[in-house]
Image (cartoon, rainbow, N blue to C red):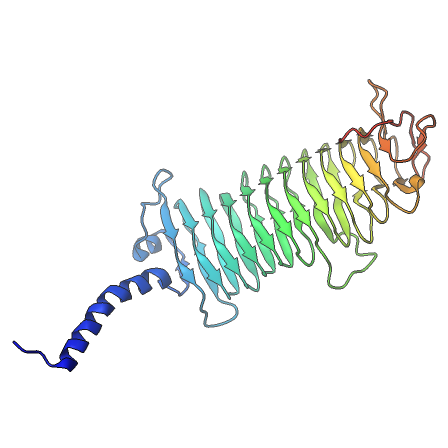
Length: 368
C-alpha cells in the first residue's frame, strides 16, 4: 500500500504526541488547586495510600504554579482524620501554598517541597495533631512556616529565604525546631510563642534586615522567643541582625547554651525582658552595637562561662541590667565567671545599671 507524504507526516506526529503528552501531564498535573475537606475527598483524588499511620495518603510530585486569583490556596486540607504526606511538590504564585487546618489527631508530613512567591503562607499547619515539616525550601512569602496548636511537631532542615517572617511556632508545646537556615528575611527570622518544653537547636538566623527600622521596635529580631517555659535553646547562630539578634520575653526555667549572638547593627545582641530563673552558659557575644546582653525586669538568672567580645561602645557596656534582682554572673561552685575581652581580670567586672558583679572574670575565652 502506498501512503501519501502528508499521511506519513500525520502518522509520525500522532505517534510523537502519544509519547510526549503523558510526560507533559505527569510533570504538570494537575497545576490546579487541591482541595480536600473530608476523608472521602482523598479517595476521590485517587492518591496512593489508605490514610492509615502505616500507609498514609501520598500527595507528591505536583507542580502547581498557575492561579485564578491572588488569594487562591494551592493545597488545602481540612476536616480530615487521615494520615498523609505532601512531598516533592513545586508551588509558586499563590495566596498560600500548603494550608492545613483541623486535620485531626494524626501525624502529617510535609517534606522536600519547593515554594516561592506566595503572598500569605508557604506552609501553615494549625489545630491538628503532629506536623513534621522537613527539607522544604520557601522563598518570598509572608510567613515561610506557621505552626499553631499542633503539639510535638518537628520543623527541621528547612531553607527559609527572603520571606517577611521565616517561621512562627504558636501555642505548640514540645516542638523541635532544628537545623533550619533562616536568612535574609525582612522582619523576624523566627518566632516561638507560648510553646513550652520546645527545643530550638542548631539553627542559623543570618542577615535579617528590616525595611523600615524603628529603634524602639525592639522585638523585631533574628529569633524572638516569648511566653514560653522549660525551653532548650542551644547551638544557634543569630548573626548580622539589624534589630536584636535574640529577643527573650517572659521566658522562665530555660537553658540558653552554646549560642553565637553577634553583629547586631543597631541594638543589643540578646535582650531579656520579664524573664526569670534561666541559665545562660557558653554563649558568645561579639561586636553587638548596643550590649552583648541586656536584662530588663528579669531576676534570678545565672550567667557564666560566656564570652563577651567587644560589644557596645566600651568594655563596661558589654552587659547591663535594669530593674533586676539577684542575677548571678558566676558559677557558685567553681567561682568562675565570664570572659570580658580586654578586661584586667585582677578586678571584678561590674555590670552596668544596678551594680551586679562578676566577681571572678575569666582570663581565657571558654568558647575557643
